[in-house]
Length: 76
Image 1 (cartoon, rainbow, N blue to C red):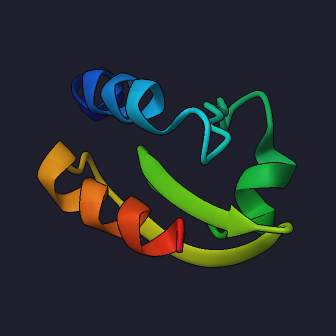
Image 2 (tube, rainbow, N blue to C red):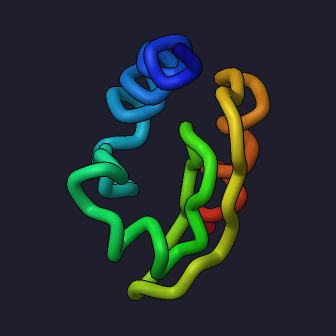
């Protein structure tokens, strides 16, 4: 499904930005409270947090070229 399609993108970005960001995969079935806290109702959802505060949320399987500029902007 969409999560399996997104997995290689997640892994590539993790390898590239592992020193700037913490990358975490969460199973919403096992962690419904976290999903509820950040408004995750569809999967995959990419959530960008800083200090526990939601900065941005993207629903769906997003490609590398769409996510890379977001990470570049957030690391400033």
